Image 1 (cartoon, rainbow, N blue to C red):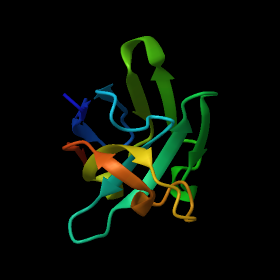
Image 2: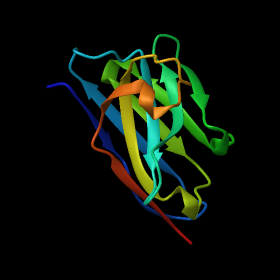
Image 3: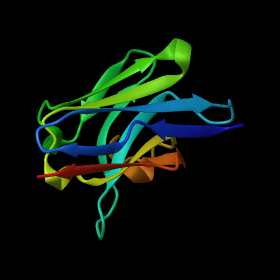
Image 4: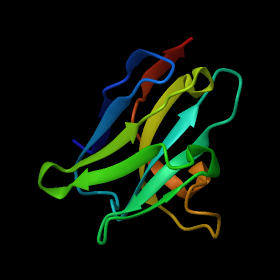
Length: 126
């Protein structure tokens, strides 16, 4: 079954950490680029960061500022997002995405991606 399944979300206090996982299955889509995106209530979906699977190279949104890290375990078909020093403004649904279509937009633009997981909720309290 072709799908992306996120896990690891939850509730955490400000300053805390979470590690999200995204397990990819199926072969009908490209996993060359995989990314993490977030959508807060009432806001548009935005990029958090992406990873280029062949090399493990990463790129992050400016607001991450060194606090988040994307990594991968190719043997497990899994991409991770480790988030440190979380702030209440980080409360959002976090989505994993794959199958970049390269429309000419920045690699962290959600419109570049065709395959999406169902999301995992992250709530950061004060």
